[in-house]
Length: 345
Image (cartoon, rainbow, N blue to C red; front, side):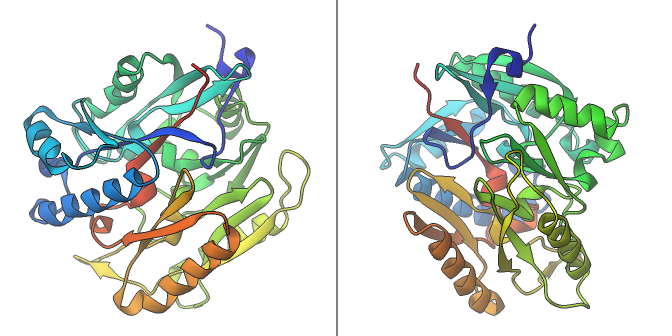
C-alpha cells in the first residue's frame, strides 16, 4: 500500500477549518487520582460546552457512561455521543491524525499507541480507538509502522513539523528506529519536508516531552513558545535551549522563525510531583481558541497569556476554561482533543 505522501495526502495545520472535534469521556478506573473524578468530568463538561459554541463535538463514551453523558449534554445540539470503548481519555494521543489530499478527500493515520512508553496498563482498547473512529465515519485508514502520539508533534500545513528529541527518540517508543528513520516516516505519512527538533519538553511532563506543552505554530513561519525566566527553575535551561534552536532554525520554505514568547505560570505541585502547567496546551476551534488558565497565583500570567494570544490572533475569540480541573491527570485542553479537518466528501 502506498504511503499518504505518494497519494498526495498531507496534514493541515490545526487552525484549518474543522468538521468537528473529537474527545473521549474520562474513565474513572484509569485515572491517576480516581477520587477527583467529579472534578475532572466537570472540567470536561466545561470544555465540551465551550467547544460546542464554535463547532460540532463528538464525545466517545464507554457503554456504562452513555446514558449519563447523553443526559448531561441533552441541551446542547452541537454535541453527539458515540459508543467507542477506551481505557483512557487522551484522544490527542490515541486518536487518528486526519489528513487530506489535493481533491479534498480525507483519510486518517492510525499510529501504534503504547501508553506513553508502556507507562499505564492496560492500553489495548486505546490502541483500537483510531480504527474505530475511522470506521464509524467511513474514512480511509493508513496504518503507520511507528509508535506515535498526536501531542508529540505540530505541523504548519506548509511542510514543517515541530517536535522534541526527548519524546520521539525515547527508547520506550521506537528503540528499533534511528532519528533518520523516524524523520522519514513522518515525511511519508504527514507529507512534511522538514522537522525542527527541539530538545526537551517541560519539567514534570510524564509524556516524555510532548511538544504541545512547549511550542506551537501560530501561522507558517511563526511559533509560540512558553518560556521560563527564573534560572533556579528546571524549565529555564529547557526553554532557553529550545529558544536558541528556534532562533537558528528555518522552516521548510526557508523562512527564519518569528518567535512569540509566553511566560510560564508559577510552579504548582501535587502529591510530590510538579504539574505541567502550560498555556501552549490550548486548542484551535473554528473562529476561536480554547485556552486553559490556572487562577490564584497564576492570575497575572493568565492575563498576560490572554493578551499575547489576542494580539497574535486578532480575528479569533479567546475562550478561557479552568486549566486546573484536569491537569493533575497529566494533560490539558489540547491533550484531550482531536480535530477532524473539513473535507469535500
